[in-house]
Image (cartoon, rainbow, N blue to C red; front, side):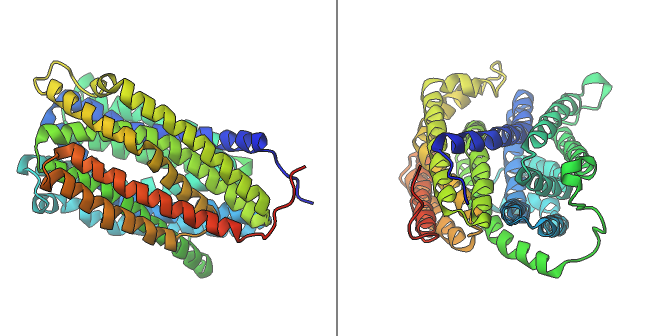
Length: 458
């Protein structure tokens, strides 16, 4: 007989899983934030180059990460069914696909300079961005495999090790950045290249630590994911691929929405692009709170679905949405009350361009406050749907919302009507609002169909 959980118990379980995942996502974002802050101290052109380089890396990464992210709901559902063999099969093939994607994507980084020039970026910025991406692109394989291992461990309720490994990576990245960007401690002054080397080193170190933990700790080690790792599993490979590629495409559509925004603002000017980059880093940090909660929801919904517990599935979804709503309110409050403080943390205030960057970024954060709630809603709805292993229709709904509605709206308001960066960001609000509404409708339509009448609450 299935035990009916109360809403408070759902909240405790979601937070116990979600808080370490939130911390790990914040720490992961801090890797790029560290690059942004230190290069903001180094120079405006270098900062603009890394904004483009890191954003472009992220676009490719998020497409490949669909296979790694597919591991999370598949492992959760397998655990809900008590099928430990399937856990091992799905995890291995998720890692296989991650390695293959990382190897195939590297030419994009090597030839990134000409691509950025064709997209209208300034030659000096495009050249520095290419220097960054040629080095950072070597880290695509370790970054994707780390993502697959994080999905595996989080689904096993080992989210705390994911958190501490990521926090350690942030510290290492900051130290290597400090040495190689500015030439401290006897190291060469490499600027943008130094930031890329630091990122690559950190990704390789993270892979070594996570892989070793999965091999030696008794809980994940019992699945023996590294044993005969070279042996193909065509059925599991096909299952991970079918679930993962729509996740990757949806992530690409979402990430591309923000990169296209950066490209449009890049045509306005360097100061505007630098302000956009800093404001987007701030927004991304708060977005990670919602991503962590959505990951926790994916795992809990996946386990409930695997166990056939429709009541736990629906109640858990309601609690996850409530937690995400409260988190969104906190973000709105901070963006409206402390914009100057938040922007100032990313700049050397002695640079002549800093006041203009802060002033422009303050306006962007005011617009960001508008889409905090809808952004929270759409990422949570996507997480809930992934728990049901429903990815293809959500991919289409998201892509249409972002690219058929969001991007044209941003171009029309910001560039055609002349409202600049704030108008471009206004298009984000419209696209994300449509995505949140359509995805939420999709989830509840699916959830209602899982059982005709839920059991009564005791």
